Length: 185
Ligand code: SF4
Image (cartoon, rainbow, N blue to C red; front, side, top):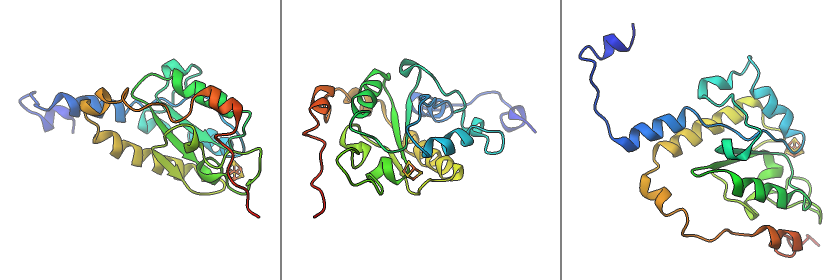
C-alpha cells in the first residue's frame, strides 16, 4: 500500500498552482510568540497528544522572515499592537493570520482603553477561533479551515497583494487614536 500502487505508471499530471498550494497547506510554519492565556493552549497544540506535526506546522519559527502563519493567541494591548503589526509586516508573502480566542477576535471581556477590540483592526485575519480559551482541537480545526482557504489560492491572488494599502501603519498605532473603540456607556 503505497504511492507506487496508486500510481503504477509513476506519472501524475497537475497544475502548478495546485502543487504549490498543496505544499503550502502542508508546511505552514507559525510564528513563535504568544500574548496571553490562549498561548498556553497554542503551546499544548504542539504536544504529542495533539500532534500539530500532521499539518506540517510543528516548526514554530522565532523569526518572522521564516514564518508564514501568525497565530494571535491572546488579548492585544495597545502597547503590543505596534509590535504585532511590525512582525506581521516582516513576514514574507504569502502569509496568513489566525485570531485565536475571543480576545484576539473581538476584545473578549476586556472592553477597555488598554485592549484593542480585535486584532483585525491592525492586520487582516483569515480564520477566527471562538472560545475562552479555545482548546487545541479548535486551533487544529482552524488550521483545517486555513488549509481549505489555501487550496483555493491562485497566483493572481498574490500578484495583487501589493495593491491594497496596509490598514494601519505602525505610526498610526503608536498614536492610538485609530484603534480606540467607543466605550459602552
Ligand atoms: S480568550 Fe480567554 S483565554 Fe484567551 S486570552 Fe482572552 S481571556 Fe485569556
